[in-house]
Amino acid sequence: MKFSQMQYQRPDMNYVTTHLKEVKQRVENASSGQELVDIIKDYKNNFDKDIQTMSSLAHVRYTINTKDEFYDKENEFWDENLPIIETLSIDVSRAIYTSKFRKELIDAFGEFYIKLLECELVLDDRAVPFMQKENELITKYSKIIANSKIKFRGKTYTYSQMTPLLQNTDREFRKEAFEARNKFFEDHEEEFDQIYDEMVHLRHDMAKALGYDNYMSLRYKLLKRVDYNHEDVAKYREKILKVFSPLAINLRKKQAEKLGIEDFKFYDRALDFKDGNSTPDGDYNFIVSNAQKMYRELSKETGEFFDFMVENELMDLLAKEGKRAGGYCTSFDKYKAPFIFSNFNGTNGDIDVITHEAGHAFQNYMSQDMILPDFIWPTYESCEIHSMSMEFLTWPWMNLFFGKNEDKFKYSALKGAISFLPYGVTVDHFQQFVYENPDATPQQRKEKYRELELMYQSDLDYDNEFLSKGTYWYCQPHIFHDPFYYIDYTLAQVCAFQYLIKYLNDKDKTLQDYITLCKAGGSASFFKLLEIGKLENPMTTDVLEKIAPQLETLLDEISERIK
Ligand code: ZN
Image (cartoon, rainbow, N blue to C red; front, top):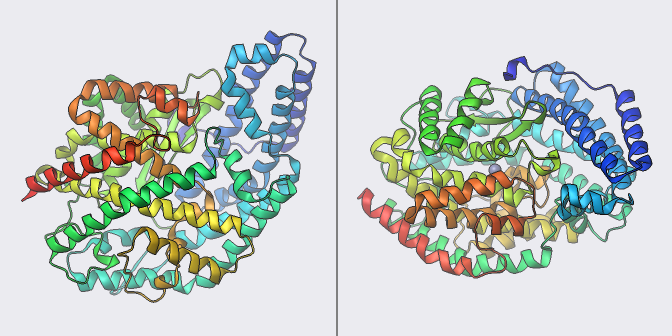
């Protein structure tokens, strides 16, 4: 089924409500364990997948063109009704959870299924009005970013289109572009503060209404984090501060020397080479056809997967006016089809899309035959392992995209990934403060952000008054859309580094471990999936200390080859 042929139909809420109540009754009246298992399989694999697919289609088509009136309305419909559907589904889950056929459930779906149910049950219909309002606020934030019009040197750009400008080899140009970007956020300072302040209070009130001390404890459950808590995360952040912050600072020192800049500023960070960063040697068609060649050569599984994506139009990659910023991967489970969304802008980022988002899509594709859709996607930290590792597993083919500049690309990718860790934990640390102190004022939040960013990146110099107030996070959509979903990237990055190091020594074995992990999808928790994928746990082992020097050596080797 091609994307353009997938029929969207808004579900009839009367039918949805009646149907879900009926399913709940059937679950409660099941007379045997087998009957219950069959009811669950039927409901999840038919009704649930239909709803998921319609909501996903509406979301994708809306984000492709936020000015499309039809899908704008549909987006509003889902903002309002998805929370209702979710809570009705949770009623079904509650009936399943309290069923007397627990043993048969575990035999059919595993222990982990029960843990997933427990996480789901934290929500009930008291949460609906909060979630509806939350969706509204998220859409409000996204619209400001999607409709950004940034004037720079006589032209107008969206926020996404600014990225390549910030890598310009002319320092004055970079600085000016950076200031134009900042001006956009400064012009909307009050709005961002207001939206976020409302979000924080709303989320806090929702947590309270559901019996939690604060939103963080509720959110950890909602994120289905079953094997670690916020204290484990705090300890892990300390390790990053100890091991990776100094490494990242050291890399920037080397970068400044290479560029011949004495007073190294934030707007110099994106430029790795005096004569310019690597950029892909071609445009959209060039990238997609080379990616197809690459995935066919990488493995039988990846080849089949990528051909499927191309044949069925499951990628919308070009930047357009009105299109939402950033990139993501989602799926239409009814059609067993993943989907990739992004905004190509002519930088290395375009290749990251074809590897990172394709890594997510590949895992989704490999997990489509799970007994229940609940096991298709794992939790976010695990999801990001698939994507971030794919960025490295495709390294042997980077010459296809960059020709003689392939090492420049690898250098920027690896340096970027290392430098990302201190920033990633800053975003998490900040959110812990925000939700533990829901009554902090916007001003206090900014001060805290400033304090934290300087703690993790002591060499940070924006050379900009507005950002130095602690406002950089306005551009970080996760802080608004997906609270506490960010530490996940850093955990996954540490896992991807492990695969990279192993891959350079033993390609086939590492690739097999990776594919095994992808096939396991969301059938287990993060810690368990690490075992399945033969990865060391970033929170409970000393893997950070172990890999940091290896990464530095690898980066030096790549750097040597460029000279
Ligand atoms: Zn991702």
